[in-house]
Image (cartoon, rainbow, N blue to C red; front, side):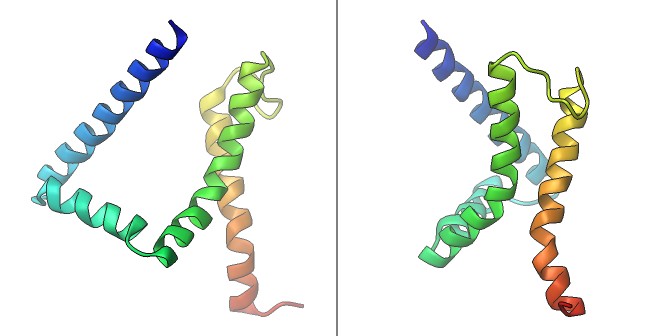
Length: 111
């Protein structure tokens, strides 16, 4: 039962993601087939692009994983109890800021 429900949820999410993405591309007068082809080619075209995709996705993966584990354990995230949307946004901003630190140090010089 759990596997069937999980599979159904994944299919529903994928259909929604590609559906909303297609509508957005059509509104921008871009072919959804060309748009998704460019997206997948840019993310998975070469070994270097796959590595860059993994590097960029890591800053989003760890906060999301931490929140998921906390929710599965029945613990509310202590930053903003009872408000998972605001907590997710805040943790995502922290993750992006942490990733941006080396870039800022390179730009302005390290001490």
